[in-house]
Length: 206
Image (cartoon, rainbow, N blue to C red; front, side, top):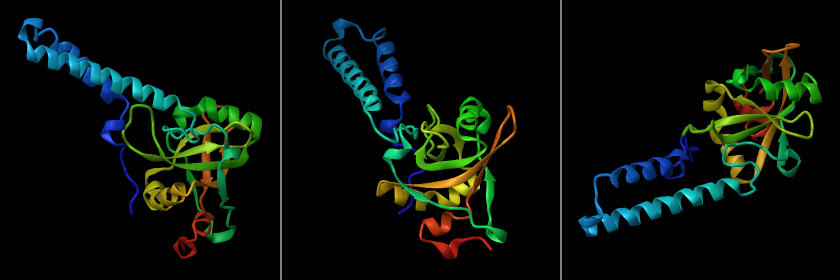
């Protein structure tokens, strides 16, 4: 079964806000003397408000990873290591959107060094974006740091297998290297051991 590409519309964060605003705008056109129409509008506003509050409370519940793919504690996860495969099979790709996370990458390099590891988190996404991606969390020190996402080609190749592992509560940890002595940093992911870690050694690129 393929992993979902987008979050369910009912769980997309801006939707209850948009619905509530639209209903409040309607109060300018529907007057109290409208009778049943006004009562239905008030009921709809109350339901939208309850939906909004429920969404906020759901986001604040402690989950690891949380709905946005961030890690609170990598040590609390069941991690599967995908060590580097030397030689001709070594596959290195850059982290996508690393330019948006330079501060986090700088902290990760400061505390964990240039060579460290990262956890791949399926169903991660940017704030307000409905698109699911595979997030990259640097775990060179005790606190995870979000570095960005798998690039599109790697995401398409590994998304489904990483998501199946996620349903079992397991996540893959891979070697990474942070290039650069100062900003802008580049983060390179070593995916050469991913096929073996996922039990799909025949899928390793030649």
